[in-house]
Image 1 (cartoon, one colour):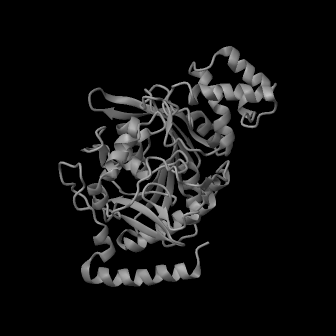
Image 2 (cartoon, helix red, strand yellow):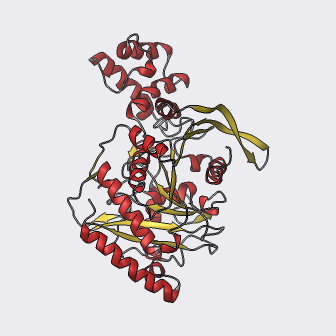
Image 3 (tube, rainbow, N blue to C red):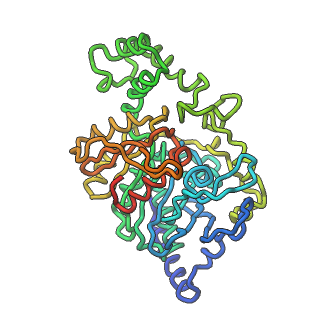
Length: 443
């Protein structure tokens, strides 16, 4: 719960900021957070960017990295981007997915991302909860969960707009992927009660939106992609579902030891076999194929090297002895409480907020079929049946980017050939989808 003292703290800060802006145009905090020279860049960005801490209630400090729009910062929407986990860093999203820069494998140099989402939007990358990335708590025994993270994320949003009040009236969206499929709807429901935030909608990529739908649909996904055979598929459906169609059978709850044994075997096929669970058709980037820092088949060394540089930490306005705990935190004590976000999503639809659920169709971790089953289970009328959507390839022209189904209140979009990290795997398609969503144009 946000305390009365905390609200008074916010109010007093807003008065201070107002006075500073009136005289200087920018707050002193904003100036002190500005990134002047970012190591690894060979050219100076055309946009402003900021990095610092948002001081959350009870000694929690959330690190943010804010990149202004390259187009029209004063009028373009503000996007809050959250990576998943729980416990994975959103600055990884900035440096490997939809941010203005891409970190090279040497862990030193940055290249320009021509499909950066800040071409048309202001984007805030928030490392949440405390214990992720540079974010920390003064309480060494700090523990958190879904409910507390939602409250802390709301506090971070409110403090961000206190620090950058000239963006307060811009359209505001919350977007992210993976376990952010839980973070986002829960935060969004709290934003419904905040009249001073111009909240418009959400976009969730390959989200952990429903345990049952994802856990059961992965059996269909693996079978249809040749990862398990016909006899194994028949066994698991017979042992776990009997005569019930697999779509309506909750395979995540093992009914017998034989069912559990078969489910464990199938799960080992995509967790332990050397396949990349985030993209069936990709190579396993980490040579030992181990689960490193919570991300199997992802090499954490370039990012670790970059953020271990004192010059980088200094440019990001981080304390000299600050620690960046890798792509996914090993120190975070987190309890997941939410098995489905059904109620949160239906509340958003009732409130007429825009909802986009998109999915790379090669991801096994939070597969596209489970996301579709979740959307269909909400019962909204199908307005536009499944159809291809297109993007313009620079060499071959108009190409199919994936498939879209439009429901009354929710857009469901797949991205062909992409895994879990859509902006990383298919940057041009992801940017095209993002732009059409913001502009309310057909996919």
